[in-house]
Length: 77
Image (cartoon, rainbow, N blue to C red; front, side, top):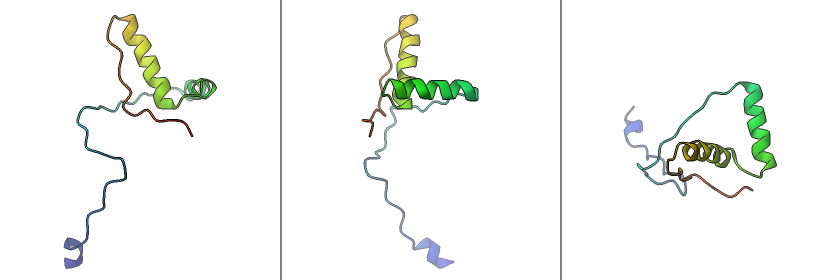
């Protein structure tokens, strides 16, 4: 049992930093809607993250709000 107290804590994955300025969100969609969303994102060469932020920004623009940032954006591979 004393072995566990001496174990080294795992390092953070590369590129991961502590950032308290972001908030994760989840949505629930019917399976058919999720598949349609995924296909549209792929057709537009977007990740799911980028497509979702674009959708949020359209909603915010409609209501006169400032657009949301995309801190998780990354190039598609």
